[in-house]
Image (cartoon, rainbow, N blue to C red; front, side):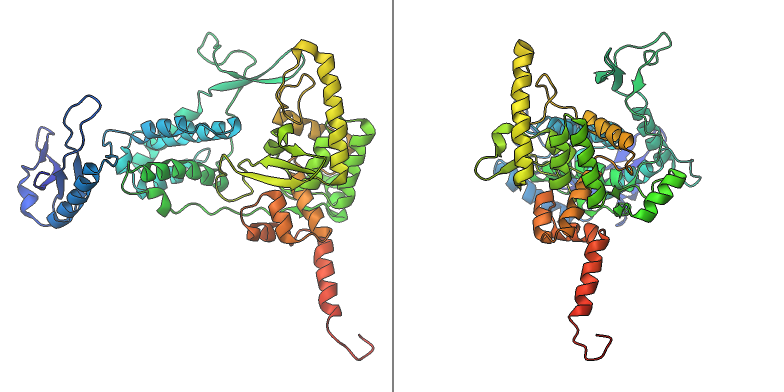
Length: 478
């Protein structure tokens, strides 16, 4: 372990760093202390003497050098000072072997569009809270008018983020039957642009929401957390970053007044709308009357609150419809919950008699479709599949849902809002809040209570009546 030295970043007239030769180093507040220690030889067998620093005092430098030398002698990982944050993000993503495809895509998008163009050039061991905070500040300015007080560093970072968004890596095309296909962007026109008729994969023209910035932060935080656990960095800056406030969007119930207003103006009262039990029942009746192929899927989501990715990823091997009448659900990340889901996170969902009967009939239909398909059958093992056994596209489940709602003239909601319908219907039925939280797969019971307890008017009315009734009265007003 070499003796610590003091150096700075001052430069001479030719632009060369002075380092330890700066005449101002004699001043206490100028420069910083650095030291080197002996690390195990690298893969090529060459000697390694990494620098460590900067430190405010020589004593602090010696203390940390001793700790680093002890860890190196014990065989612990030595920080790679040549690794950039972009390189580490690639290493981290490659190490995620058990990620679901849709989750991996969301991670890769966060890395490709924000992590690497924004901070990929910064050495991972030098990444600090200020770097992450600048990234999130610049992300808030995407698709907004330019600000006058932006620094040159912020303007340059914004330029890189916008450049990363322009060449979308995939496009949507439609085949002869009208089915939407996701393809890699390879064909270009004569001017170097996208092929005629190709729809850009990245179409977002609205400013990024605070929720999206939070989701990007969770990805970058997970990567930095892994680096910290592996001793690649000595400090995890993601744990102390101030993020933009997420404005909570509470579900609104389609009341008679809101329906009347919607019919007059065509405008939805809110982003997240929920059907009361009567309208939810009407939707299921329409599905049954029309003989909709995905009726069992919609019935399961409406009554049990599965996420779209969860219901499309159900496997027959994880179901038990004869004894326990349950499904094992592999949880997916969702913006209505807190934090990233573990890739091995599962929960058990009881289906109930009606869903059991529908799933049994669906299994029989699937077997008939398998016989009809013959050698063309795709043995995916999934509960809900296309007619040839291939995995059911999540987008199709939503598109078909929207078409049914529009054709029936029902108040519009998103497919994901069926999950909110299930929660509010369970509340109206008197189901315990903890049971609802476990059924939905929320990590905190308080989250369920905060979102749903004020949604269903019937629940609030029943609570008011019970509160008044419990007070003993002697007069006529009792």
